[in-house]
Structures are given as C-alpha cells and as structure tokens.
Length: 135
Picture 1 (cartoon, rainbow, N blue to C red):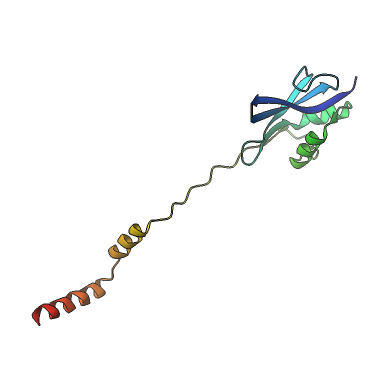
Picture 2 (picture 1 turned 30 degrees about the vertical axis):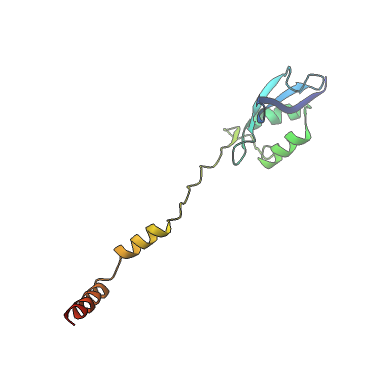
C-alpha cells in the first residue's frame, strides 16, 4: 500500500484551512486518512503551521512520501532538521497585528503649534501690540 503525506482541505469557500494527514494514495483528497500530523492556515500573516515533527519523520522512515507542497512546507519550517528533542511540535504562530499610525490633520498641527509658542516671543508680541494701541 503506497502512503503519502498530504494536505486535507477544510474550511469554507474562499477560506481554506488544511490538515497534514497520512493517507493511502487511492483515498480521496478530503476522504479517509490514516493519521493527522498537524495543521496549516494560509490566511494568517505570516502563514501559521503546527506540525508534529517526530510523527512526520517516523512516517517518512516507514516509506511515506510527502507531496510537493507538503515537502516545500516541511523544508521551510525545519521539520527535516528536527533532531528528536523533547518538544516535537513545530509551530509558527502569526505575528501580532501592527499598530495603525494616524497622521494628524492640519488643524491639529496648528493647534499643537499654538500651544507650544515660546514665552519670550509671546511677550514681544504683546509689547508690540501695546505700542500700536498707544500710538
């Protein structure tokens, strides 16, 4: 029996979510599988992958062949470099969302400039106004 490590598609229309599974080559893409190895979500930024590296290497030793897409994902996430340590779950979580920087409006800039006027300049301006009133 030929066995492949491949992706099983879940999720809704235009919102894919995948599971890494070990399945017989004759089984349908989303059909019967032997074992689930992890998950892959291409919609997060960066794409999140959670996979049990020990199980993957065990299945490869038994003769399971990864598909081209699974092979690429495993190489990118260092599953082939796993050395048999304690934690066999390899996970790439999405990065925290970036803060949105809002540019101030022209009115806000003018108000801020008025609040930060130098006291010496302001005193000179008042003296100039007093001189004009006396004349």
